[in-house]
Image (cartoon, rainbow, N blue to C red):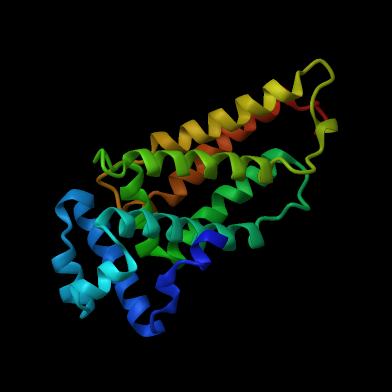
Length: 214
């Protein structure tokens, strides 16, 4: 986040900066990287092309910045709200799942952009998006596994492998529900179904790995 804070875009007047970010995120989310032009961004944001390229040398620089900015906006709030006092990893992951939906409703435009970026296939930006996403995944995983109660697991269970199975299962389920054609309103319609299905997986994982009295 320090790299983003030091970006010269934050020397721009607040209203102009926020307008530019909002407009660019919306355009990229709707049309993707290739079909979005800087001309339509500057027209709606009411800034000059010279000013845009003063802060961002290329369209790619703007897109990558917006992706990192969006991720960090959401994750800062995620880390402040996730309950790490809950030491049962299955309960913690369920809470994390529900928190994600709360944040999607707080930042709908940002989440639409992030979702579209995950499915972006333009070679100009795909590598940097992929690499940053991998770093994000490992950061979240390290955070979510802090100080969990391993005594909940059965004595004959390899907890390291069990945790991997738990994380792979729930991440796999989450990934299976995503689509490049879905937007926040589409996911919101399915929250009840997602929650029920996540509970089924968590119940099965609890039976497989936890002691019977837990």
